[in-house]
Image (cartoon, rainbow, N blue to C red):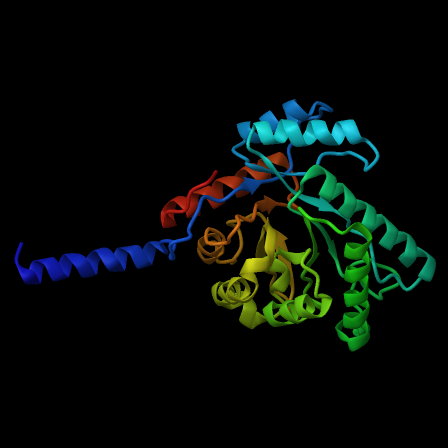
Length: 309
């Protein structure tokens, strides 16, 4: 092969690699994919095997209470035997409820859920920061972008973490489009303010899309999110967004592959997170939709050379 032919071959190979969106960096590793399962069982071993049957190496925590010590141990042992990690324990209550009594009760519940995450060895316990909206626990409110909201969220995160003092799990806040944190820089500011080793990031890239700019250039947004927050990411959510034609901005959550989120960028970045952060399908309407979403993610991953555990 002469020099000119070699050069053309090299350029063609490099261009093809770039077009495929091949993962970059020496730290690329297989991804743990997970999602809800339909199997109704109280047997941790059966549940763990069902995740593996579906191609999942990560799971939402099965139903268990903090006082059920033996069941917690059985879950941890059974899932470890199948190499399935517990990605998250969800809290999903309003830590900033305008009603002081409800807020106190919710904070106690979140603290209990973090204790469960620590006991079962989950990657994280996740909640949103909350809302001052009196009618919807996740609803929009003018004060959700205020200094008061930020300071109260810092205090809540510290209080929850200090109440448990976890050593093998993290407490995380999921970004929301209309409250802080709502992007890479605002989340980094929160991390620095909370100032706790056990505080981390739950990555939901769809929740950071709150403008046409971020929607149309989700790849850049995702790159920025992982560049700024990568070392703190404990777990991630997988879904997609469509823009519904209206006079005002209206994004709709849909099955991965039906929307415009740049999954090449998402998977490529996720494959370089150290340690690995599970990617969990969520908010879909049926097992058929979960299968569709799972297949799309695996198809995109194959195209860019990303593998799964």
